Image (cartoon, rainbow, N blue to C red):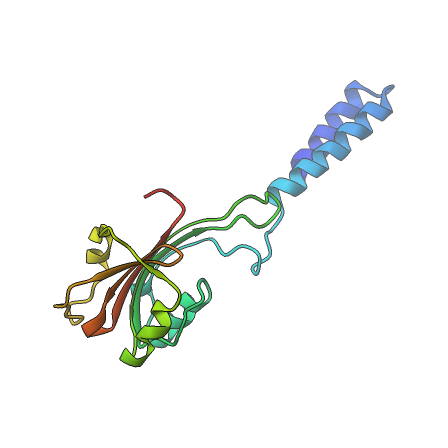
Length: 170
């Protein structure tokens, strides 16, 4: 705001006889400064780059994940890396994301996760999951691949799902 006052004082000195131009410039400057420095409400901007390992416990990890994605059922555990660029706020635009999610579910919930989705004829690249997979999540079964709001890789025997949702092109 100090900048605006200084600019207005300078313009007033130079253009004393041209008040309408001065007032027009002042209004324009205030509008520009308001847009640039306008605080985005916390509920509107959910931009994040978060690893599940940053949380203290399983409950915090799961609750944070639920604030970004609707899960078909409750989950037992999760590991993830969520990257989300919110399109909300003054400069409204499209939101973009790259969600890398591993979940452990109860075996009886597997059918709910696979409800109304199509099995893929192609295998998915799972290299992204290696950085997230905990040592104690042992996987020995062959994966099945599905398309559900992204790529869903299911290890049925272990009730473990790798879910990749991506609009960023990575």
